[in-house]
Length: 161
Image 1: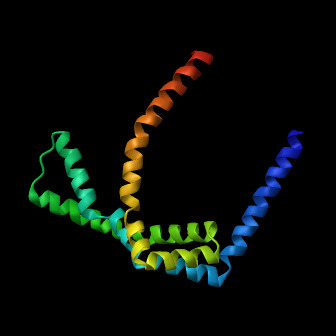
Image 2: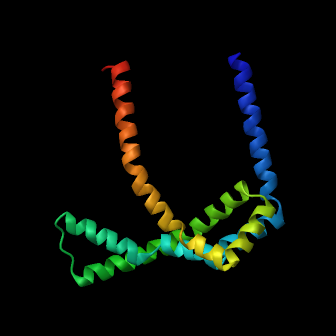
Image 3: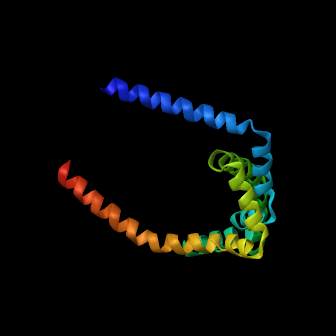
């Protein structure tokens, strides 16, 4: 029985890999995915993810909370370093996003997303994604903490050290 399950798992993995490889070779799908990633709205989301101002503010606040005093020159240096590092990872983000779009969405879905994000409503919705995720994460954090505390207690009860 275990061998059958293992064989099925290997077969399924191979089929998924082949299916993914075939989709990646579709020039129309790739072009649509690249268009989606280069869409001004998607680029705007990437801009917010790689925001020097937001990251600098977060880092400075964290360092100050730890008792570190930063001069204006140090903050400017930090900004420069952040910009250099974000410039380094931005193309990698775009490549990873393109790969994910190709793997997840069909050509028609990508085209529909591009069309939706080109509308005023779609653009507005997309730009709110970051705010939505921050709100959700803030609400989910205490729920997940409780979950892990209960899970930890239950596992400790079953498997004491």
